[in-house]
Length: 408
Image (cartoon, rainbow, N blue to C red; front, side, top):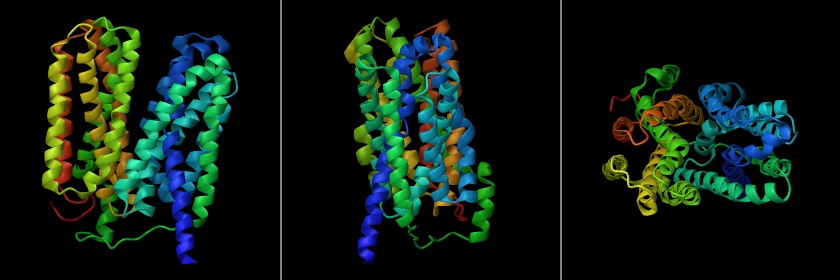
């Protein structure tokens, strides 16, 4: 009977992880693909409607650091329930053809996803502490699959039906996720592991409160922030840069899809490597990835007009680098902490700071791009970000757990 209950718990929790991964980016990434149709229906300009694409990032920035505090008050189960419920409500509101409901719905979705960004590593710590690599791989791959699937689905649905129908389609996954999680949480029991050496309860509690002064946590913030800056700048400005170099629009679309999809194989193998490799071999992997990032920065200094193969090489390498450091950080949130509360605290702190960097990066790059699209300044800045990100990842890998009282 106990084994049967344990098996049922695992099935429902695994299904929940899959569904949560599918909806963690797709409600956000599909909006830019139908802005023209939404603007026409609501009788507003694209400039006014563009705020729908920036609201989620603002929510990530504002909410991330509060998610751990919310979990401390409500508990992990209740916090996850509220997060998914908020996404469901926001998705339903966006089905209504009014600007107000679109704005409020997008705000709610951004809030819910911001909570999931922080709480998913905590969920893995709580329920799958012995399978961190496998479940981190699972939900990160699902994030990318969700984006790819709904991006492919959006155009035909909007063309043959309407954008409102696509909004209804986007409600389905959150509703299924909520139902699945409600069934899972009734059976879910956290798994406790022996506490690693170097921990004292009182000192750890004080360390959580002083998280923003913890250099080990700052290393993860810098790593997460570095990859966020590169990723958001690439998504926002690489199409414009390729346009300047006369790359055809259709080719740009395929190249950006290539950039997004390269992270999928990385997500499959990397979390288990991060968990299982020794610090020495993981440092070698960090060094190689940092070197590849510097290679891309160098390639951007010698841009070849309209050569798809050249830009494909840049985007493939850049896609690998950003996905490597993203997966590395998400896995380290779990590997370097002992409890779900600690994981949520570190994840929230790193993501709050990281998304602030991500919000500022495209703005600065835009100003530099306006002055000189292929300017040397932004490429030097790219190198600096890559070096800082690589050093922070190396430092995080060589140090002990974030809340350990040991000095190393």
